[in-house]
Image (cartoon, rainbow, N blue to C red):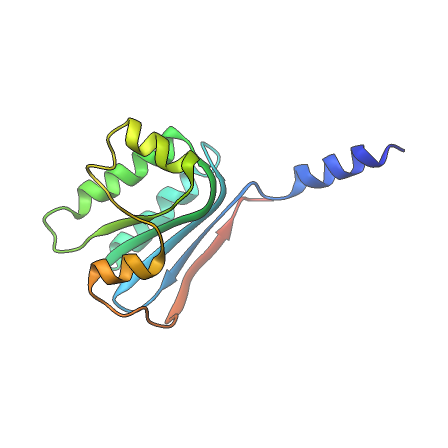
Amino acid sequence: MNPTMNVSRSAARRPAYAIDVTDRGDVVIVTGTGELDLAADPLLTMSLQQALSLGRSVVVDLTTAACCGSCVLTQLAAAGRRLRGTGRTLIVVTTVYAVLRPLALLHLDLLLTLVADLDAAFARLGVPLSPVVGVADATSEPA
C-alpha cells in the first residue's frame, strides 16, 4: 500500500473547518478556523444568529481561517448591517491575506470594522479582555 495514499485519505477525513461561539461577558466571540466556504455557511449562519440573539457586540475571529468564500462574506456583511443602529458592534479580527483581500475588493472593509487581534477588538469596544464566561457552542463540520 502506498503511504502517500494513507496520508491523503486521513487528511480527507479531517474537518476542513470549525466554528466556535464563546461568551466573554460583554462580548460574544465567533471563531472560524480552516476553510470557510460553502460547506461552512450553514454552521456559520447558525453561529452568527446565536451570537446576535444574545444582545451583545460580536467579534468574529478569523485569525486562523485559511480562506473565506463569498457566502461567508455575505453572512458577515448581513450581520454587520443587522447590528447597525443597535448600539452593538460587529468586529472582524484577521491578518490573513486570503480573508482581507476579498473584504477589500468587495468594499466590505467600509461596512465592517477590521482589526488585527483580539486585544484591538476589545480595546475598540472599550471592554477589558475578560476570561471565558462560557462556551455557547463548539461545533465543527459534521462527520
